Image 1: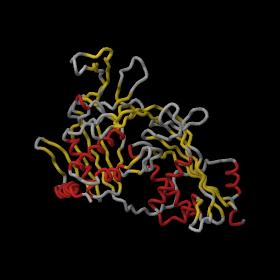
Image 2 (image 1 turned 90 degrees about the horizontal axis):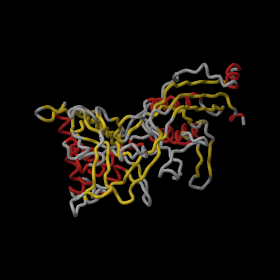
Image 3 (image 1 turned 30 degrees about the horizontal axis):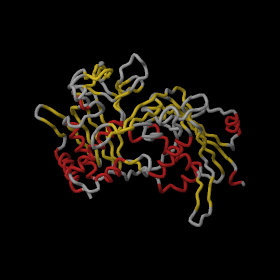
Image 4 (image 1 turned 120 degrees about the vertical axis):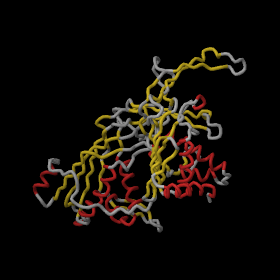
Length: 448
């Protein structure tokens, strides 16, 4: 019992600021296919289990050699091979994260048939999101007992806080499509030593006025064994662009381009869907036998009657700049008579480029733990987007969504290649790096 006596506390407070929309599903589908979890007053919140699960995964993935310390910090409950149940109480307590300010919006989605490039029958769905800009309060409490080493817990906290501050631990669903990016701000760390009467009194009064903005100890050393291939490319919109969003208001067009907090955005889901379908087409054109399996391993799988698998391709949601919306009225034509179909007038409000040479769209693609041929496959897809052969978004059949490449920055294995365009064509910052990337592209032809 003496070993379990409490000798101190560490309290971490702060604010979690959403930098992209977040999906924390409730499991209900009364109003949408995916509904955001809410409290009894209808306000969205982040369950403590969601954040704690992300923290545990981060530790287990990047610090497997610290498993004993992690088990003491986060606790565990499991059965051994002999079916004997073992458990240990968690020293880490995370409160549910409630929002200071948060807005919920509905987004529409549609499943595209990769062979026909048109919407699947009954393929439309919708889901709720918490808009970016929402602010959630964080409150962590770490209990230090006689059996614990306080310095170990401090080092674990000092290890997990920086990735949260840098926005490298997304929360919720569809994180590979740019959702759930958040940053920890206004950090306040309060430490209480219960052998000190003043600290005991401060704890009983919940007085955190002596908190500090960072730990005075170093985090555990991080050795990244996973390779990351990253493409950041900037494009101009050649003509017009739309990722459809349907309004319920009578005075609005039938379809407008999707927005987030009043700003037009290019969703990661739209980019990811387009590059996934084109990557599959490239492998099938090269007559790769297991093309679909390779694409599933790279991009992941989900759905009914399918074993879910998390992909390794990450796409960020980005704002669309230097564009203006304009309503365009259209009609449906009877293909047999060549005349208009009655009551078939509809309109949409796509985005038009203010200057066809200025950057409007920024696309960031990352592949975790990549193989050379996978990087080469994404380079082939980038080439298709760059050369105006792969449109993004909706209404492609009337010329929308065509992008024109301006510049790109490709990073891998500590190397960096910058690509720009001028009157003579493409300009590479390093010819040897360009040759290496070309070798990646060649390896797509011999996928195992």
